[in-house]
Image 1: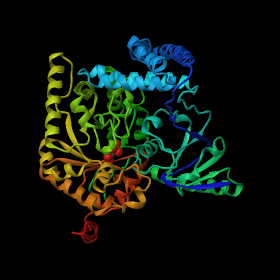
Image 2: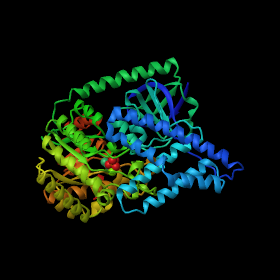
Image 3: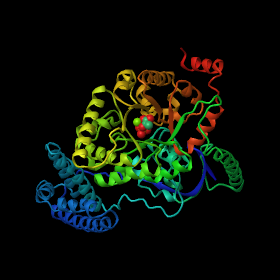
Image 4: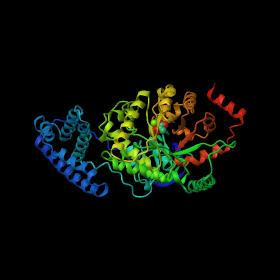
Length: 557
Ligand code: PEP
Ligand code: MG
């Protein structure tokens, strides 16, 4: 038996066979070749294999997602046959005598640079397609298999680290647990695991390698241990633990249908954070008061091209209908940073968390934003929908967003398409700038939602993905707690409500403090709803001596 220690993100015992995920890192050497004709033949063969593959993908996609969305593979075939594209490759191979994979990579780079200087957004988006097609040919030249990662049975996914786009494309019905060498508890992969009720361990370091691929293992999401080929004694110990935890969960389940009410009668809302339609049953099963944060960008990650308005509308309508009139807060695209997809054609950035992301992208690429807003407003008649804008740093951004929403509403009105004209618009408070101007923002929006994951990273100046995060950052930093208090005070002066939707909202050691700061709602991963309810029901806010001391102590005022 081998034991590897990590930091638990989410409790639970999970069993399965280790499946080690390797990212397809591509190495391209720059070589002068003695036989360019041979190199050209390698390119031609790779091209025909890529063409065949695209044909199959087109046929398959047509069946699964319809002809319109399948068109992308047709466009890729056209790029592959483009004369100008091929002439450049020929120039690199036959005239300049470079190796075939380098020739394709250079051509892709040249094409991308050229497209990025065009005015049209549509053409700019084709950059990602050129890169995608070129990667496909290079893969064939190098005889590498695709980046597909298929799971046989229940698997423990181990990896160096996992991007959100990689996590969302895994077949969840076969994922027993996640274990990563790097990562931090605030990373999106960790958050996804929590939402899906899947045990996850992070920060396992170099001990976690692919030598364990294919071995049976058990993840203990409580202690943070991964047991590879566990012995009989360990198996018994884990079974015993599982029984005990099962009993605790059963007790929690008895709180279903009860209120989130303190012992002295103050009631609070506890909502669920969701990433996709498949998470809705978790919200319902855990008795969520609504959806406090629907991370809409995840829908853009699982695909090769932009979803159209109909598809978005269908998805948003599903969430609001399934939540049966309960509040559903849908966050507009928070694309960029660690949640990036090729077809957006966003540039590679040195520091993407502080880069061109979220509302910044939406205000510049208004075509994408308007499509999303139209779908949201159309869905608003099917339940209680609210719109949340991420990464706000300035009042002007909110004003611009409101201008666009007004114009979208006018357009829908003209077209006779029904929508609710009173949809609440909220700002995410997840930058220190937003905290400092929360008094001004409160006058512009209907509500605030505090994203403590980003707020912590920007306030404490450490990337939320950094594997040293937990070791470096003091827990519940005073600066962050004081910021939350400031935001609550500024919102309430204007009669606006405040939710905490970052991971800190589920920290039970802070629930009492948050309630006494007059936070109106907490939005947490579905399996954390009942533990938060249990905590709220144990608190007596009218015991001022105790509460007052706690607040004073906690905020050191
Ligand atoms: C946050 O930043 O706290 C938040 C809720 O948003 P996300 O984790 O998706 O960045
Ligand atoms: Mg955020």
